[in-house]
Structures are given as C-alpha cells and as structure tokens.
Length: 171
Ligand code: GDP
Ligand code: MG
Image 1: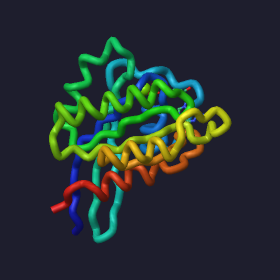
Image 2: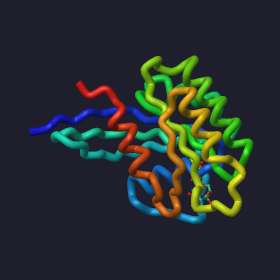
Image 3: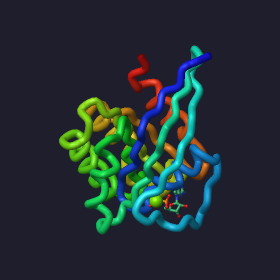
C-alpha cells in the first residue's frame, strides 16, 4: 500500500557553490573535499518517505554551472517540477547569479515549479559575506523555500529536500 509520487528536480547555480556536493550528501550521505566538477549534467534519484504512506521520488538533474553549459540549462529545467537554486554564503557574486536563475525559472519554467533557495557552505561561517536575513527576505518576497545548508556537515540537507517534497502537489 502507499502512494509513490515522482518529480523531476533540477539544481542550478554558479560553479563551485556545492550543487553536486548537496546531491551527493542527499543521495549517498557522503562528502568529498576534492570533487571533480560536473561535465554537462549528472542524473541521480533519491526517495523520501513522508507521513501517511506517501513516498516522493526525486529524479535529480545536477547541472554544470560553467558558462559554456548555460545554453543546456533549459533542457533540464523545462520539464522540472522543482528546482534548488544554490549559492555559496562566502561568495557575494553567487547570490546574484542565483537571483538571475530564479528570474529565468520564473519566466521560462513550468509556472507551478517549486523553487528552493539554498545558501550552502554554512559551515564556513568565518568567511560568510551573505547575511542570512538578507537572503531570507529575498526568498520570502520571491516565494521561495529557503535554507542555509552545509553539504560538508549535512546541516539542513535532508530538511531542504523534505520541505520541497512537502510542498509538491500530492493528489
Ligand atoms: P558545484 O560546482 O556547484 O557542483 O560544486 P561542488 O559540489 O563540486 O563543490 C565545489 C567545492 O566546494 C568542492 O571543493 C567541495 O568540496 C566544496 N563544498 C561543497 N559544499 C560544501 C560545504 O557545504 N562546505 C564546505 N566547506 N565546502 C563545500
Ligand atoms: Mg557540480
């Protein structure tokens, strides 16, 4: 018994913010200080059990952040049901880049797409340049879920994906 729902999830964000690391943490509960950067995109799946016998399976497309792959992104977000847009709390430019991805999603992706903003590398608090409150205010104004995460320590990684699962239309 129980119901299974499948959703396509895409990760977007500047290169080196930790997209692949968040996926590796979520899917395998591992972290790697010397990850090779993603070429094109990688595909993984992970399931989350919610209450009342409901299982959500995410089909995850982890895209490469490099400019030269930018033209491929629409292929991944076009059919996506949800997106995680990632920035690095130690890199100011990465939040600007995240905002531009959010705008692009809001113009070009499915109008019902669920978008989460993730401020990653929260373990590097000594090098923080992006205020939690500033990012949270932007996320609230824009209708995004918001978490500060650390793929390294696993802080808020399951919470991020679980809150997306809970926000998906399950009917
Ligand atoms: P991507 O290009 O966005 O996929 O980024 P990667 O996942 O390849 O990570 C880029 C670099 O940041 C790697 O050296 C990771 O080990 C490191 N990294 C990723 N997430 C974290 C984190 O939460 N904390 C710290 N300290 N480093 C991280
Ligand atoms: Mg990557």
